[in-house]
Length: 334
Image (cartoon, rainbow, N blue to C red; front, top):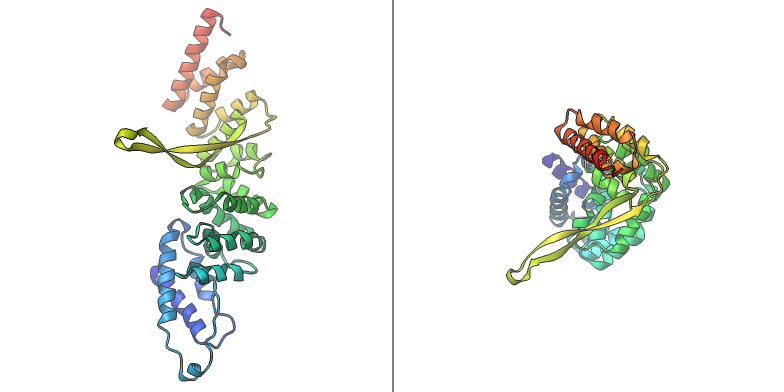
């Protein structure tokens, strides 16, 4: 794949250098980058930047071009130029739709650019580019960005608000909800939490809890329903554990948003206790223990069901619930 990428970059650079076209030919580059795994984005970005820079600098123009002013064509690949001025110019030149997920990701990553002017340009331009781009491309790019933005050292709160605004666009929100349900792999639990910052999941969380392919996503959705709020990691801050020896650790900073839940607790327990995954049933058993005093005669029914579960993590919680119920009967606590 690396050889294909290098070849496509050189072909693209040659189409610029030839001087025969008003618009550079991106056909091969788009086809190749559409196949790249976004999980290795840093690696591919470095490869493409180096090859493109080398191809452009190494070009020797034909004799007739020595007497004419060289054409300066701003391209999508200038978004990752070594030159900050060129990156800013490239961002401000963006118009219309991004050709695929990879190129929209290039634009999104400018929100973490090391040049403030580039970040400012990205804040201003990205929403319009997102509206013009295929929602599936935008959703795929945002899945990766939202899962990693807490590790972005230069992104600011205003930059995050830009992405949250893009997320709230109707078609993009629809595509993101679909990915949460249908994706069999990828950082969907983290995506669920970050999307919970907005209202795009409200009214859909029960469907996600019921239908999401990934058990961890269903578990997270059920926990949000049980607890009445969505929780996400805002970032991390350094906390000293022993300042005398300069010892400490990074502590997660957690944010949350309240949900309006209308589904009765019994119904949620019934559905989650019958889930095919022990990950979800374990969450259900934890909630049972917490809510033992509010379930009346149903508490023992659920406790016995969990105690006989084939998963040890679930059954031990069911047994603990039965033990607590027995103690309560003897002392008339409930």
